[in-house]
Image (cartoon, rainbow, N blue to C red; front, side, top):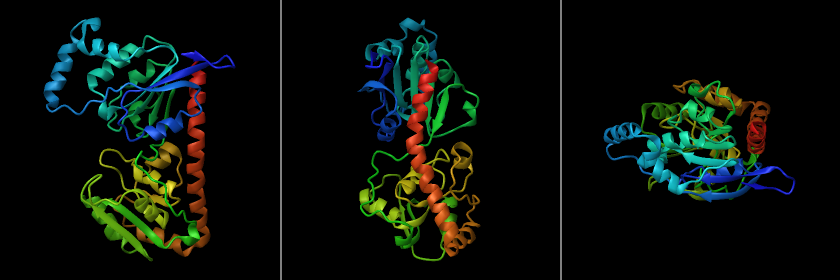
Length: 324
């Protein structure tokens, strides 16, 4: 903790899982929070080879008095929480025992913040309620409805995203739609089949797996999105929200989604089609034929993303200030 020249408190930020894809977005989100430093405290751990055995060991450890628990003692050697500190982590890389002990440890302080990337909703609602403020990056869930001092912000683009070399406005784009990613499950195969009925040039590049060798990367990927009017963005493997939606926005393409999640969670203006994508051709063809409506939608999506990038850091700073 330190003081800024104006006399207000500044936060020390500690990233516990530095291998996270969202770290550049985290840094952007915290840009308006008065901070003294951003420090890496690496507690990243791979998934256990034997999950049931790990759950049993965590339960047995919970029977030991708190100060004697091995996890708490190891945690105490790495972190030194204090008022006006913020802890950042991705729950995919933070062991459950560490999450449990961290929650209990942070509850002893009045001015603690958490910034969590938690796709499988492993965080407990109580963990957020014990601290001054919490931010969930993406993955809004009913489990956390009504939690005070909790802000959910969009997922954002991942750390490997490269901006397009040749940004294009709407009139310069030559592709009606583009999809680069896995087309292995029935929903995505049906999506592609339906989108073949959309007029105009399209670009389809199926990949064998997430981050596989046959994926297009870097500017080659983002240039393709930037040259597309629409980018279909079906749900990710675990949650409805996915990086592709925000990569499309960053390339000034219009995400097309098959869930009301974005609308309900973030009031996003993206076109929503049915989960079977059967109404997608009619909707997209109608927009392609109605230039005025297409330009209005394009501008709405562009402005929404600009406002999200500008407004979310301001909201986080205001949330932290209200907790003081």
